[in-house]
Image 1 (spheres, helix red, strand yellow):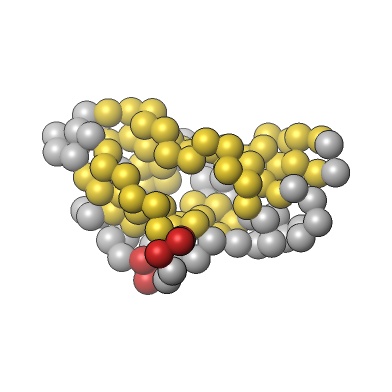
Image 2 (image 1 turned 60 degrees about the vertical axis):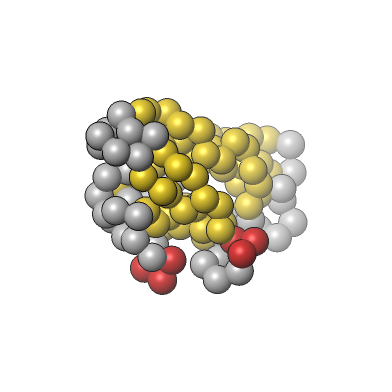
Length: 118
């Protein structure tokens, strides 16, 4: 197997993605996984930053935005950086990781992908 580290598809410069939306229907795209259905896929690593003075509820939508199995909920404490969210979880088949937050433009997401090929 070969690993290649790449930026999140929603973060072309590697500086983070400000979560601007508050619902699953218009959630911000964080990453679109490789289209491969045979390779192991993209190993996703995400962290959150919250420079605001209050905690915020962040939702990561994993591969879809409707089923309860797609929703991952985190409370991001006030004045924090580098809060781990996703730690090397694989995703493939062009599925999309999205994010929404209880308040727009307060939390940002950073990360990278280890693209794994056979």
